Image 1: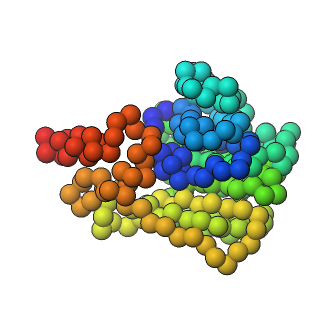
Image 2: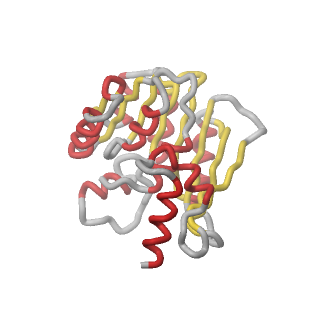
Length: 232
């Protein structure tokens, strides 16, 4: 599975302080788990139902500096929730979100992008069972899915704490939201907005700053390379 913007956003946005165990549900190549391992001391379980994804994430974990704290397992979050209860201080998920739409021909991409195998309700029920009382649940979704997902979360006593609205290009409508839930109901919700690209196609300073810890070169080199590509 390729590394997508959704995964990078969720990995960069998620706070890991004070968490001893993390679950990455639907890990794909393992990018989110690796990003969280980079800036925490947590034990991280990364799960996926696709065998090739688990094999790839396991390989990526083995060659990382954090291999002792990372584990990949082929299992669905629904099945995991049947055996484990209240054991994770943080659960993150970049879930499948296309429903009742044209399916891609590639079976692996179908599993990753469509909710046939994991509906929003199944995800929330599983999170409810696996999350510690003081835990947090972070998820990235299409903007259009926000209202229905919030309604489902409230039914299972998961309350919105933080929200990041993601705009792909300056002047365009948001297309993604990142939501952070806890079990504590609060009327004070932190709202942030992040724009990835300027109108001319170059990355914004805020996006470069947001993701700079995960590039192999410094922000100025990133900006120069992007500008070179735009002008080519």
